[in-house]
Amino acid sequence: MAERTQGAARSKATQGAARTKATQGAARTAGLARHLRLVPLPRRRSPAEAKRLARRDLALLAGSAGALTVVGLVMVLSAGSVSAAQGYGGNSFWYFQRQVVYAVVGVGAAVVVARLSPRIWKHLGVWILGGATVLMVIAARPTSGTSLYGASRWIDLGPVTIQPSEFAKLGLVAVAATILTNKWSKLDEPMQLLMPLGPIVLLVGLLGIAQRDLGTTLILCGLVLVMLFAAGIRLRYLLFAAGAGALGAMVLIVGETYRRTRFFDAWLNPWADRQGNGYQLIQGLIAIGSGGWLGTGLGTSRAKWDFLPNAHSDFIYAVIGEELGLLGALAVLVAFGVLIYAGVRIAMHASGTFERLLAAGVIGWIGLQAIVNMGAVTGLLPITGVPLPLVSFGGTALVVTLVGVGMLASVARDAATPVAGRGSAPRR
Picture: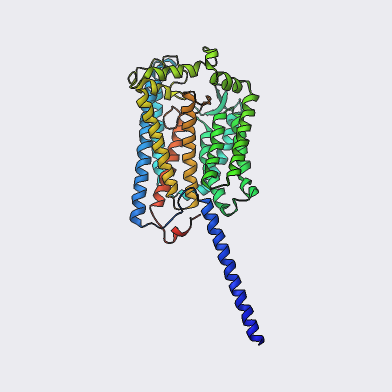
């Protein structure tokens, strides 16, 4: 009798343990589905299917990024010819020649990065972000950094000038992807989500503010929000973070005279001071409006003749609209749309959680920066001094952005090599 009782007790205990394991497994599955609810769950794919998807993703990525880079080279030659001739001894090709060198270096770096395993960024990210942080401190100091238009965000190294905040974007994407992957099962807990990602973003953001570069600071914070969104963070956490960021941005805008002037006068009411605060935006709108449907013709811009400041850098999209018309401007917009679409596809087809978040961060960074720049040029957003990715003149920005494209390509290539058992759950 005692033996039967003990056997029944053991049987109940075994059934209870089985039910507990099943409940835990269901909870883990539910958590996984919640975190990845924005995109399809990873599944097993045949090698042929994986290669087919990767080839399509890589074709979209290479085609759009290559087209934007070529357009950028052509437009830097056109938009920068006058200012280059005036500032560099009559050499109207000066900006173009340097941009070609930067493009060659960037494409070479992208090819190398594309052949690396994306998981190498788990180890490189912290070193890149740490080095960029130190360089941002150096750039922010008036005695060691180089100031232009009120911002101190460059370091002059003689033959080249580097912008450390561009490297910070690259490092922050890799570090944020690593942290979110390591804390994947604890993303429902606010403190686990906040530490150590919150202090890292805060530090980088404060350094951006110290450089008087609010635009880049918003891009850095925005790309992290995109990654949190891709990770499936609860909506109330995202709304709180976005609201806190918007409130902080408004405080910074109102608290500095030049930002307040740029926001309220140069953006909201540029016509009140046509020759002062509103001059650049008005000249940009005149350039775009002058282009009509088909443009005035390549190389025939009037705005670049000392009417439009930064015609070859921050406001190059206005010259595109003038010389290539509405159709040319829309073609550039479509190219960015294809690039973003390719990045989203690569993130969806990624082989693991880290790779997925890495791709989401890179495409979030490039997409947000493109939106901010084109929005500023067309008057839809305030002017922030953010260049147009792959198109505007700028060595550090072009090289680092092409490295980001190489990271996306490495994620796509990695997904083309399915591993047995990978499809049941995302690899970390």
